Length: 212
Image (cartoon, rainbow, N blue to C red):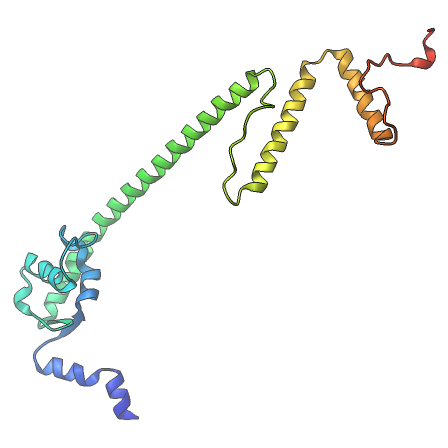
């Protein structure tokens, strides 16, 4: 059990690395991921070369390669001060990276807001044109709703139908508006019980008190 734990924790490898005079070891991929921000050649992602090649670019840039040895899959560092130096450089670089990300994010939000304003303007222009039409957009061909927006499309069409009906009613003379209200009330009372109940002709009001 103890032998298994020793092998599992990599203690033998640690001992061999320490005896060889190395204080730290790290895979090239992990090293590059942590310190790639320190050089333009490796930030945000290397354009060419392997993880090992780009790791060496970083080491040579800061003259740290003399304290390091390349293994097959890992980088071995002799002096802990080299690691401290890399961490110090990284801490100095982080605020600059944060500013770049903030600038990029503000630009993204700005473009998104501009696009939204432009879409709202186009929608307003389209709506103004519909409002000026004689049929109030009755014969306008609606665009096909994207997948997942079918219910929203139905609600928009219903909203337009209600808006159009209100606009038509607003254009009516007061007398016709009163007659329309009476016909609506009659329809609610009669419904489909009678095929002909005079909704197409003009109503004159109180027929019981009329002379003729």
